[in-house]
Figure (cartoon, rainbow, N blue to C red):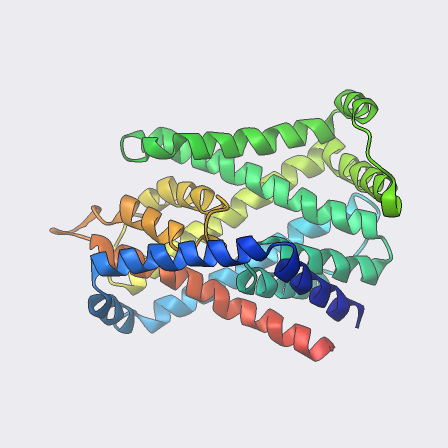
Length: 328
């Protein structure tokens, strides 16, 4: 019941506090998709989807589940180092519920709030739950930045236009990690930043900050979670590889390793609804001119691959919606 109330509160906040964002970002996604569909041809796009190999798509669907298991496992590490023990099954189902809300709300914040409320209620340790979710987001972003920078360096001729977004992502998350991992920097910032204690805001922020410091100060946990995050991104690359195979396009796995992290980094820009439109445009930029045999993949296959990736994640997230409904 408490999770339901939190989810309801989250939706209301999306409606009231983020009204403009709720309107603008979906409109941007629709506009971008319309432009892209006019370019690639909608009927040809549907033909490509209809001809996709079901076995390869099934493999991609399974890999989405594997990626979520990895995410739940690294989340478990961040909780355990703070003395909070939660089963992997509980964290996996909570992740599914959060993914459902992420896919059907205009921002990714809603799902994180639901995850925090779910584990906070389950353990009675809300600061630690908050710190684990925020910390996992930060470390996943840093790992994505690392893999994207490697891809950027090795494919600079075609990806140099994305340098600012990729480097900015890496620097941003890197700074946050350094702040929480360094006691001296935390004390310095704490003495200069004064927060009002309205509704115990200062106490809550301090509590979350201390919990994150525990996680980020443990170098082994920090390193292991970053490695797991890289493993997560490697799984995302494998999902995309299977999607191209489903479309009959034998794209090099090495090429996917180089460019998929860059695309995922660009997708994080808060421009559109869950990256729709932006992601498809990036797929076209990176994959449409790739040659398989004697022909290029083309805009239509590149866009189909992007939307199939979104569709696979969305299908898996529907299980989270079912779990949420059964808890009511």
